[in-house]
Length: 137
Image 1 (cartoon, rainbow, N blue to C red):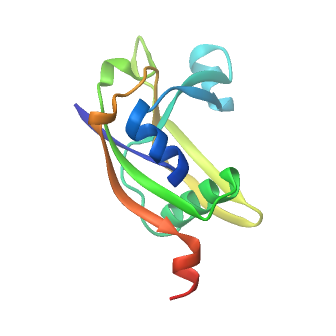
Image 2 (cartoon, rainbow, N blue to C red):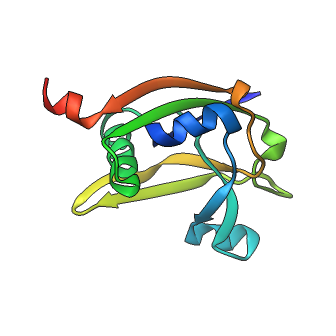
């Protein structure tokens, strides 16, 4: 079992605790080089825990994308065999992320795409973030 990291909203986390993590549509141009299309249904998992600007940007991305002030970071146990692979092995995706003029991912951070649902017993809440609490402290 390998650990990956997943950011999402608090609302989604409440659903994940009951249903587990389910694959969703992911669109990344880099996928075309591996699987011939930019689209895949899967779960985005960071290979390593993010810190600093990549971490903050990931939290802000979740809040902006999902219209909430509350986000979470999850530790997700997964099987390598269930992640997107080619004959050469696990597909490792480098990611760039920008919100406005803030370039919070510079391509150094890497992720994998897990193709199957992940049971809630393999998912642990690491941190919870509330923008309003942060703003008021």
